[in-house]
Every structure is written in structure tokens, then in C-alpha cells.
Image (cartoon, rainbow, N blue to C red; front, side, top):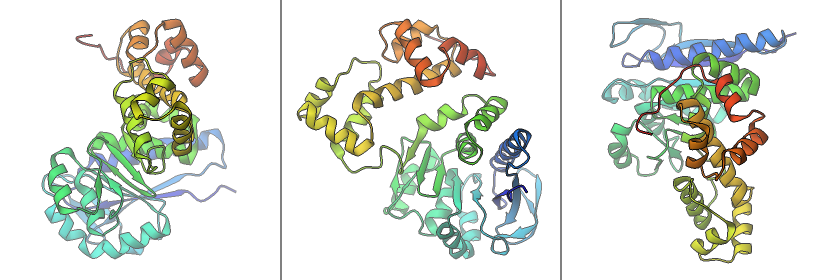
Length: 335
């Protein structure tokens, strides 16, 4: 007997951007279809619309009308609750959602993944759910958000944040990245790769490179190690060694290596390799740069060594990876 479907709900309000509702719906629908094609026991996905003001027709600012079959409180706790991006000022939507703050807190406590898009992060923040946590929002709202929510750690350099079961995506494009990540967790890597190829093959790399995950290797409290991580991210192509990183940190190599592993669960050089593989993956998807140029930009001294390590980590040679996963081609200008 098939397991019950995953339950996904989008909260609907008049200032919502329709694309931040319909694109996640289509991604999850495609993922469920793909999973069911691989085995009838796979879980489906039921996607519903809940009106912030209760059931009824909701006319968006673009003139598009969507039907909310229910209000949020009438639904059992979903697996995923999406708060769509808000067009222009979020003030009206925030007022509309004030009566839902208690319900949002209840759902968060029940384990529902709450995902806000753009300035909809303010709705979660208004409910007090982001206090003491990391978050992001639309870039145009950074300064105002920081002023209004001093208890929230605003991650301006990240397009996506995760703190437990609370996710913030800075834009409509970022919610696509995040949804494919959730697809991988629900349905596995194979389904996620099929969905990313169908919609946009650069999605998964965008999530890996853009996200700040409080459950990830940057969620520790060792400032020395975090500084080294950020330094490696910003100087990816430079030559690095355990000795040079330790000297920069002002500690002995053995001490630096021990602290890095304790904080991140991996060694400094393994962490660097993962960063380089991720950047190479992004360049293979996003550009037509020659393999030798990609190798150089990511810190490899030779294309052959790049190919060897890329194949070991991904299972494909760089050329094969580019051919197999990229549905769109972009010319690299000024390279």
C-alpha cells in the first residue's frame, strides 16, 4: 500500500507573486510523478492553497485569481508551508497575517518546514520564529529588516538560509533552488537530478553555493575556523596548504587541523576540495569555458588532475557531466 502523500501548502494573499506559488507546485508535482514512475509505493505530493484571510478567491496584483479552498487553521500540519514572495511593500500582507502568528508557531513546533520567499520572511519574523536564528530576505529590504528585527541574524551574503525547519529564500529564483533541495530529501538524489534537468540544471549548484545552513559546517562557534572557511571560499583559486592556512590563523598546523575537524567534521583540505568541486560544477553548468580554464579558476594546476578529482567526486568526467546535465547553454562573455 502506498504511503500517504507529502502535504505542501502555499499561503495565499493578494500581494503574492504567482510564480513563487506555481513554480514550487510544478517542481513538487514533477518530482512526485518521477518517483511514482520508479515504484508505485513512492509517496505522492498533495499541494493545496490556503487563504491568509480564509477560504475564497484571491485576486493577485497582476489580475490573476487563485482559489484558496481553505484557511490555514483548518488543515492538518503540512510537511511544507510556503509563504510566497510579496510584491512591493509587505506592510499590507504583514497586517493580514497577524492573526496567523499563533498558527505559524504551532506548525513550526509540529515540525512543518516553513519556507518564506523574499520579504515574506517578515511574516515569520513577526511571529517571533526567527529570533536568535539566521535568516535572509530580498536584497532591497536588508537594511530595514536588520533595523526592525535586531534579534535575527541577517545573512546578507546568502540567498537561502536554513535554521532547523525554517527556511528563507531571498528571491523567486532561490525558491526553485530550495525546492529541488527538498525534493532530494523527500525522494532521493536520482529524482532531484531528473527534476533539475527538467526545469533548470543550475538549480542544485545554486542551492549548495548560496545557502547558509545552520545545520551545516558553518553552524559552529569557532570563529577561527569560520574565518578560514570564508577565506577559502573567497580565495578558491589560490594555492593553499595546511601550513599556510595555519600560519594565517596564527596557530600550529596540528592545532588548526584538530579545531577545523572538530568544528566541521572534515579536514581543511577536504573542505577546500569540496568547494572547488562545487564551483567547477557551477561553471560547467553556467558557462562554455574550456575545461582548462575552469580548472585554473577553481585552483587546479592541470586539467588532467581536475578531471581525475571531479570524476572521483561526481562519478562523471567534467565533459560528460556538462553534456549530461545541462539543458541550457550560456556563452561566457569577457572570459
